[in-house]
Length: 149
Image (tube, rainbow, N blue to C red; front, side, top):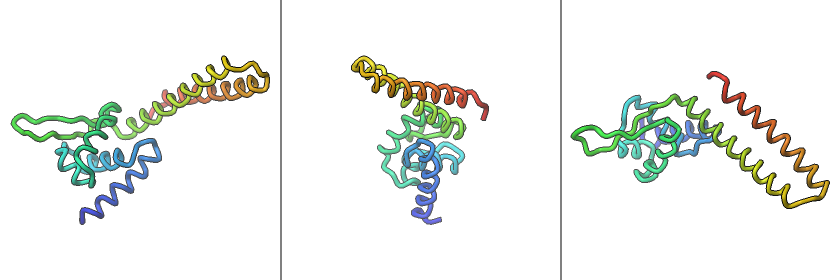
């Protein structure tokens, strides 16, 4: 298959993963690692998805944090390899839940700051309503986090 067609396929797969919270480069990396089914050198991975080695290397930080990939060295080999280590659905779930929880927590913190700044009943009513709904959403997200895959 022509390299640019493969890159388009990886980009199409990246569109799917981007809808779940990953960036396009993360989606292309995951797609290439899924297809390879084995550890791939960092250089080969970058070539496969049409990105620079430095871009792939930086993008791997998040994937490693989420438990999706890891960098490995082989004895006697100077190359750095990348291996898919986690279940993609579980990793996507972790990324999604982390992002949503952080956004909700940030909003609740900001609401608390606004509460200290105002005494107007109209503003307090607005804060009460939105804070209640954010807390409700947080409880819902906690239930989603407990659901089996």
